[in-house]
Length: 490
Image (tube, rainbow, N blue to C red; front, side, top):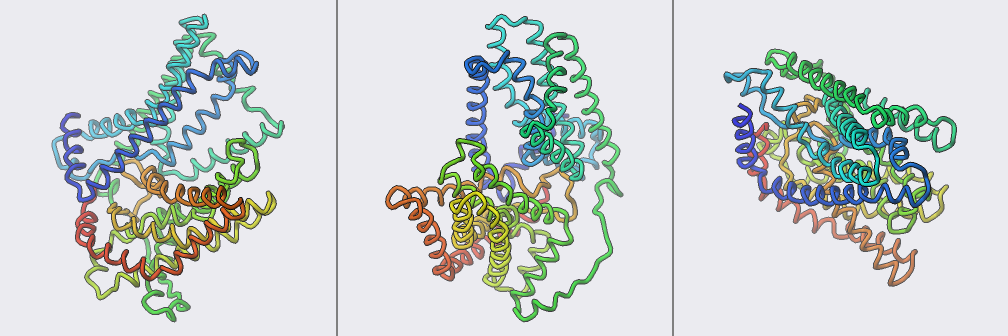
């Protein structure tokens, strides 16, 4: 039965209208996964010797001390980027297939995710080094098995809470507070968690405890979804009372105002789009990693430009990246009306413009860390408005991925407002301004680099009409492929 379900998903992938786009994305993501695996492999081999060389203490105990933060970061990272397996559930419910087998298949796919097996590239070589260094074999095996059990426990916990944003943000808030408290020597949570991880080595049979936890979470997730897999309510679309919002102040802008009204209503009424806006707000704090000087590798002008693009481009990357997918549910209706693509694209551009200007203004407190910090944000905002906003809309013509606005549940589909695909497609938009800055930096000066990035962004405004004419032609060319793709629900 599992072979049959895998065969159905294999056919679904190759028969999608967006097959070419998704194939290239998967290839690039595979390359990214390869480099992540190499990085973890190097860290797994070198961690023991690095800790030993620095004289920080017993390498195993040091790793155990910070393992709680490793697991917390893994949980947050997978919540943001890990996609739950996409399965066309409703047609399967009509077939002579037990619901239990469908759920086992879905959960089995999450267990084989890159977010789980990639940790082996750290834990296996580190465990081998421990054995070479005469640590007891039974203790190392117990510790290793316990660590991998906790990784899979995080996987099934993610499955359970993926539709409960309150739980996720509460966990994030707790660990942020714990990290800050430890940094300022107020409270050290590792003094309580390290002994727990030490026990897995000192008393190897205790490794059964995290495995029992993992099995419990697995069956908890299984029962959770099994009890909701029925058409009349479990998979039915939720309905709510409609509320009218006129927003008459936008009427003066004609068709542009009408589109802006629709976008504002979409953001206010749907959890999926509100999540995208929330993520763009969190992007404002991303600069703290780069401008405070806390991380030596980030303390340079090149990485500050990277941070400036990110800080001011949060809405552009989380919301703008999915234009026109946000309108996929009624896109066929729009295309049957007397609507000009140019007016539609202009409305999206102005929405991104307003959000980017607001983000640039809100980034003003970074002046506290020096003029270079805010200069990076300012020129990053100009570049986002002039260049990246065009690139986002241009790329939207090829991202034919429908967005379900009626649900924010991620258990049986890609319901995340920010995922690996959007991150991958954002890389050219982040790297190009760094290259432009580098040219100005080395040919002129640091100020020359900032000025050059700003000038390139201003050129985007000057040639906006010509660029939008090209983008409009692409949207018209891709129109029927997009309509076909939006009809596909899986």
